[in-house]
Picture 1 (tube, rainbow, N blue to C red):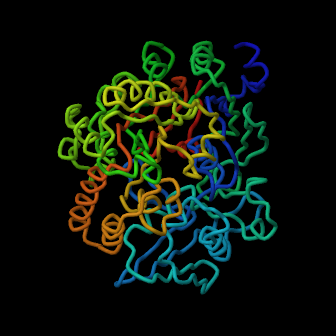
Picture 2: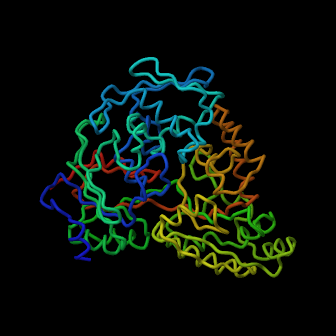
Picture 3: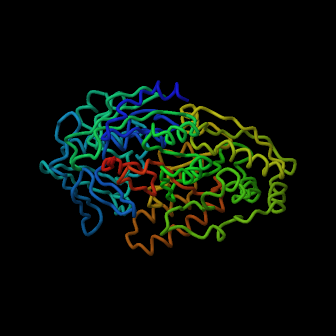
Length: 493
C-alpha cells in the first residue's frame, strides 16, 4: 500500500489548499457527452458544466445559465447565459457554444448518452450574445431536468470543430484537468475564471487505489483528505474512526438484473416473470450490501416512486415461478451467462452469486462472467449479453431516466432490447403532460407495466458514500451521487 501511495505522488501534504483525494475506479474516458460510467461522470462534472444543475433537494439551480423560462405553451425554452461564464482556455461561453454542444448531442454519429432526451428540439436560436432559445416540436416538461446532466455539458464549439472532444478536457467548471495518468492519478487545478466564484481549493490530486481497504488505511494515517467509497463493507467502518467523517446519502441510482428479451428464452414473458418471482430482492440487498439500502421498483425518485409491494411479484414466490417456467415449456430450466463489472459497483460479484443461487431453485443455471469496467461498458452498450448485473444512474424525472431505454427512438434501446408500444406511449404522455399530479398518475401506471413485463428485474437502491478528514468543510452529498460541491470545499487546520 505504501508503494502505491508513493507512486501516486501524494505531493503537497503541507499545502492545506490542495485536496488529496482517492477513489477505487478511474474514469474510462473524457468525452462528457458519451461517458456512462459513474467514475467518468464524477471526474467530468468537476471540469464541465451544463446549462443548469440540481441542488441537494433536486431543485434546478443555475449553471452556465443564470435564468430560464418556458413559454406559455411549453414549446419554447429560453436561457440567459451568465456573462461571467468562461471556458478554461479563457474564451467566453457563448450561445454559439451552447448550440454547437446540443447539435453534437443530437447527431446520431456522436453516440451521445443523453440524445433521446432532446428529440423534441426542432431548432436552436441565438438572437444575441447572452440568449439561447430552444424551439420544441411539442411540450416537453422534463427537458429542463435533462439539461442538468453532465452528459449535457456545454463544450467549446472550437473544440467540436477541431475534433478534440474526448482527447482533452476544456470545460467551464471549477477545475481544470492538468494531468491524467489512467488508472493511477488525476491532477486538477482551480479554474480562476470559474463563474461560480473562487474555489475553496487550489487543486485536487486524485489517487486511483483499486483496494478500498487501502483507501481507508491511508485516511487513517492522514495521507488522504477525501475519498469516494462504493463498497458498503468499507464505508460502514468509517464511523469507528475518530478523525474521520462519513457522508451517507440515499441515491437515485438502482441495482438491477437486466434480462435480454431479444434472446431465447427471455423473449418469453412467462420466463422473464418467473425470474422476477424467483428473486428475493431483500436477500440480495442484505447479502451484497449489508442491508444498506432499500428494495425498489423502477422509479427511485421520491415523488414518483410506488410502494414496491404493490408491484408484480415483489414478494418471492418460487412455486409461482416454477409454474411460469412450466407454462413457457421451460420446466427443466436453461443455462445463461450473466455479466458483471469488477469494481463498479464492488457489490456486483456478490449480487451475481446470490442471484445465481436463487435462480438455480427454478432450474436457471447462471454462469457468471466478470469483466473489467471498460470491457463491460462496451459489451453492455452493444446489448451483447444474456443477463447483466448493473448499477444504473437515476434521474429526478421518470422520462429523462427511462426514455433512452424504453422508447423506440431511445439511444440505449440496444441495451434494453425491448420495444413495447404501451411503455412508449406512457413515456410520451408523461413527457407532454405539464400537470405534476397527472404526470404522477401516468408514471405510476408506467412503473406497474414495466415491473409486470419484467424486461429487467429491479433490485434495490443503496447509498452514496464519501469519507473525509474532519477538517474538510463544505461538501454537500447529493442524491445523484454528484461530487460537484467540491468546488466550494475548504480545508481547515
